[in-house]
Amino acid sequence: MADSPEKRFSDCFDFSSDLSLYIHVPFCISKCAYCGFYSEPGCDASLIDSFTDKIVREISAVNEKRGHRPYDTAFIGGGNPGCLGPENLGRIAQAVCEIGRPAEFSTEMNPESLDRRFFPLFGKYFTRLSMGVQSLDQKALSFLGRNADLEQTRRGLALSQDLRKETGCVLNYDLITCLGPWHDALSDAREIVQGYAPEHMSVYALTLEEGTPLYRRNPDLPDSDEQYTILREVGSYLAANGYGHYEVSNYAKEGYRCVHNSRYWAYRQYMGLGPGAASTAFSADGKVTRINFRPSVRTWLEAGLFGGCDIEPLTETEACEELVFMGLRHKAGLDLNRLEGMARRDIDRERIRNLKGFREEGGFLVPDEDGLMTADAAALELIGALSDHGR
Ligand code: SF4
Image (tube, rainbow, N blue to C red):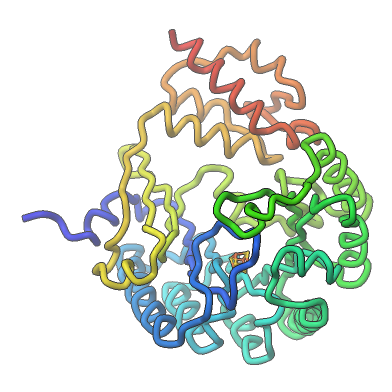
């Protein structure tokens, strides 16, 4: 008899090792014009209830495998977890914490969704709130097709400040830059830092995702040199105000880096649940498996527990490439000994010492500011070095 989807899924993981949990909430109030992520617009109440019921059952099943060891970190993202409402979001958070509260537990939420009914969940479960602000310019919010207008965005920001005061949670705000010559990214960053002083900021350059309304509009966006200038300008401002640049798009005050995402970039074991979620599983004997739940909430609901996913064992080469791409994006750097162990061969260290923007330090290849900006190109170079050396 064929194994059940639950067994096929859980057999990929080493439950006795460290494990981070990501829950993908596939609902948004409406779709932003630039968004290529999977989510269902409209917040259908019965779909949300069914989603919550199933995800809670899946979390409980994983908890049983995990025993009494809390997840190292957990993150509820999306989509917009605010669409679930406090009751359903609380049920999911409670299920995650059934085996103990993770040391860091984040939820995303859009500004228009935050209200005081969510506050008790922060004292009890969540330690961080990540809010998609994107801009404090009404023209930019309209250009991006955001659901929240400027007034709602400011209201959400003010509420998040109350939330921090009342619960001690850590705040992250996301900003999108590189919208065009008319947009002043530095002014957004300045207003956020001076007015709201989050502990953490994520700053992205807008990219045109095929199939989105913005892609079809084909606006005139900054080229890569202009993007570099804009991102460096915003980054310098943040650095001057105490935010360390620790990943391509992420900045944090001392002690407030996102541990969950840092574990992801360090290529640690990572379980994703929910339609569209991805996992990287490491079995006890060292095999690496990528698991992707298909991006359709209705298909996901029809499939049994842990059904509706594609399970793809990675070859050594694929796993090494992932390790390299993740490691070079992050100031913690790429663990060269781990890479050599996974690749089962030595790396041409002389060749990597010549990589511009990186230095070798304590067995790690660590990016400087320029390296963070050119991480993907450097990863390709390093992967080339790895395969040439294997010949
Ligand atoms: S809120 Fe986030 S996930 Fe939802 S459509 Fe907008 S960008 Fe996409």
